[in-house]
Length: 256
Image 1 (cartoon, one colour):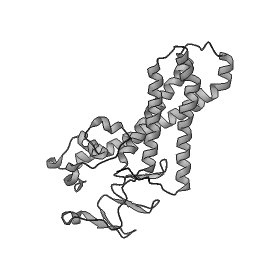
Image 2 (cartoon, rainbow, N blue to C red):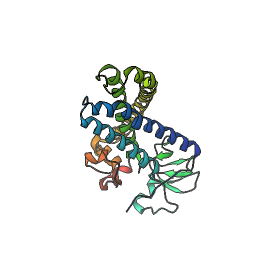
Image 3 (cartoon, one colour):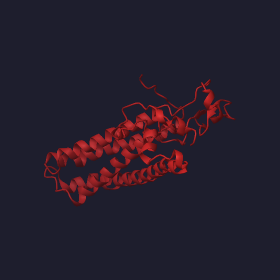
Image 4 (cartoon, rainbow, N blue to C red):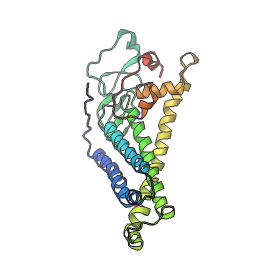
């Protein structure tokens, strides 16, 4: 079954997503056009570096699109509650709907979300049970792309050989502001911010295992597998799939 697209009607969120897309377009088209491709054409860098840059860029925008349009875990109006789990459900005081514990009501979206972490304006969506893994991917690939851009900017001025097909004085005059300042500044901001956010998210996920009793203790790989919906570690990095809850996580959910 194909995943249904989910959109939040919030002009401020659209503006934030537009800013993120603008930074992505800047680093995906301007930097390769001025640095990556010219040096590849003159044989200064291998084709693998060009391929890796565009793969990282594609995975970054794919994770952004999926995290922004995936249903974070909105609860149905009349959910089916198994009799054995009714003690783990509660009534929301804002929307008057039954919800499992650790669900929260998002005032921006107007819905209760299962395992809601927070509402992120930069993806214009809540981060909940069904798209938390996509948000982690977005943080990770943004770090990779930002670091890649910073390395290219540094190498352009301190490591790469001069381009014989360009007038170096004219190139520096026209593009120094775009390359060295704007690109490096956006790379530093994005890398620093996403690194801090990614560390906070991973710490929150992995700390759940330490809060469980010894009887129900699970390793960190199991906690990440539950968030990502698969035990295949390679699939943790692939945004082009759908998430399926782990069958073994049913009993653990009542303890977190």
